[in-house]
Length: 72
Image (cartoon, rainbow, N blue to C red; front, side):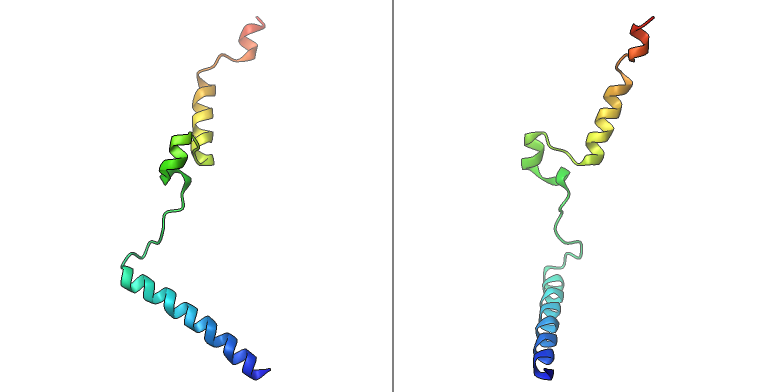
């Protein structure tokens, strides 16, 4: 049981050290960009992040006539 625990702790320590070494060697502490808006393929398809889509829809709704204006 103790042997298994030590082996597991060793694997975890090795993984953490390798990730730290990758960050030190690469020199970029920010990591990869995972935002949808930063992907050229998603932009080409017209897919944006939820916040951008919400802002676009709110802007479009502000320029549409309201249904109450037609009922008069």
